[in-house]
Length: 303
Image 1 (cartoon, rainbow, N blue to C red):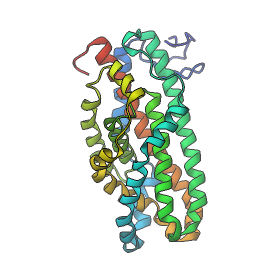
Image 2: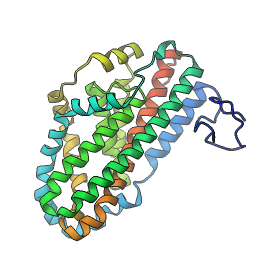
Image 3: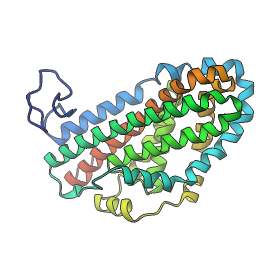
């Protein structure tokens, strides 16, 4: 079997091309790609949070009474991060070259090539986000309760910045409220501390899909270039998401109430959180890209 992108012969049963990193192994056709991406998304949706995130509940249980006052103050801090969303968007646009291609006039081969490059770019941004969050967690994790309220918006801001870079890699119109709501819902699903929380957040993310799929690629391009996000309207729309996310993040940061533990665990917990949160954004964004290409280019009504 040959790689559909670079033509290199792939080993029987191989899922990734050793030459170009292409993960499109089901056959050179957008229908196969769509089925493969949906299958990977479904597998992500059903998979539990990583072992570090799953352990958060056990860590926080003995000090739950200390967290309540902090939780009440976190959501407004997250709203403050959202109010600066245009800064994260500007950083994402500066970091992703090439802009939004003309998908409506792109044949399948060129789309496959673009999609493979988008996969590579998104994985690189995820790796960079992990490194940034591990550094931030190690630095502020030693500050105990005195720094935790500074650490939470700092961590959330880093995740938002890299989430936008990943989303833009797949062509999402990140200057729109709809895209920012989807990104926040994906982060919420990826931040869950157990499978029940993740399933609930993932369900709300699926509801968002239909809104973003209504726009043609030309409309998406125009929004990606010309639009200016109204952060005031966005905050109103996502306030409930931020409240739930604030509780989840506070639990993740609970170890910082004890400086000795915070210094040791801050980097690891940040990295585990980032891995799940950014993977959620990546899975959502890549499925969105293929479904939109299929719907608006091939005219498939069942997407």
